Length: 558
Image (tube, rainbow, N blue to C red; front, side):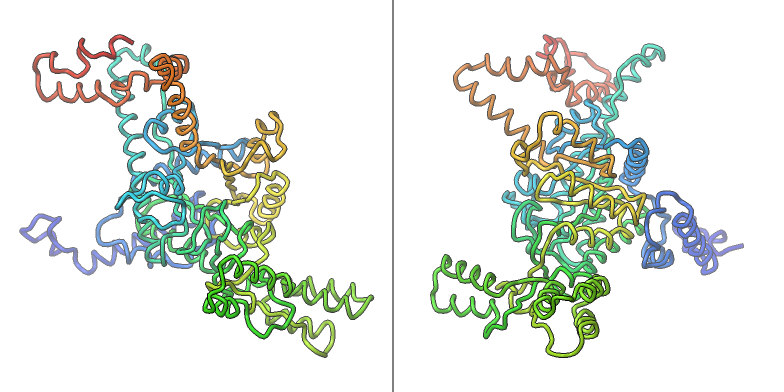
């Protein structure tokens, strides 16, 4: 008989024996290993860089109970896979409050998106300092918004269930319209809000708050910008992979199946924080003209001498133009084309052999292929910015390269672009899906785009999401739809209310709510007053006069 069984203490208060503990530990490891190797959920992911034992060691003695978000993640995953097989999109709108979340659900949109930009500009926590999307708000901000919306979802699910089940006749109940309020929430994790421990804490908060999926972008924390602003700084490819691994490890420790989205902002980014990863080297820009002073040192001298900011900016532009910035491969090609008119074969050989090599290896290849002699002058240190950032080409090739690096570690890949370009999206998708055929892609149908100025006709706009879905961009979102729809509706109402008073309110709000069948028309009922009355009547059997939904409620007039 074990010491636990013979103890006079209740079993939950007794420590297991060393043998029992080891058996449980081994069982949990084996169970996790089996799930990773057999569950279709993990089929598209590379083998984790950590072991099942590493995970179980960090889980504690209690059996792991996954958070509710894990169930929502499974729901999202099955939805995305189903739509992928159908060649159809899961497209949705960014929401900023519970009213919008419920209306998305009633309209049949299958997921909810929560934008970091919207939280930064509308909803920040702490001191409630709102402002542009620089990733400088408390890292609890977006998880708190997710929790707020997730709790609203569960409330409206309970209200809806209560209303249906109070209809005791199954046939009558079966004819009632049903709404699934429990739509998976996809949340913006920005650049992770710090180092790897911060990334893990953020991932844990998201999972515990109800986010089915989270996306992380490959920008530098502390220099983060909205994906449609200039001045974005990328981290090395390897740094972002570590963020993805850290996030997955945290969710594995929680026993949660949350969906991880790797976003690359490299298509429109032209700065890099470090050259530590050779995979980034072929996109580095360097000077091809020897200079007495690096640009940053030259600018520092100008600042010290009191030169005006406008003049400094002008000097920087001239310096970059004079020094003919280009990639190392471009510099080699230009050099040998100037030396020989018959260098095509050698250039092709060099470009093919150096395409994915570091600068040091590429230098050796250039010397070997083109013979000895003086090396090509190329310096990526000289053009560095005043902050110490390297300059890069940006562009779709850089985005493809990074996405291929992230693909083994993420469930979905997000291409952030500076323009809505179907041709560019096709190029990206076809390269990615040639190597990772089952990888689902994400596209931001951003309000930052001036859609009307990009040459789209009405039919083009209508078909855009369906054309994208044919290429594997299954998840698509208008990230700030909640912000803009709120602003547009309020601007129209305010302008008309100023002159037309209640006629404006009735025509622009109540009449529209009635015509659309919007349940917020009866806002007391929408918020759950009848549901709460039912709970209170279960506690106190008294006069119906105290019910909030009694005959004196003004909503009885609707």
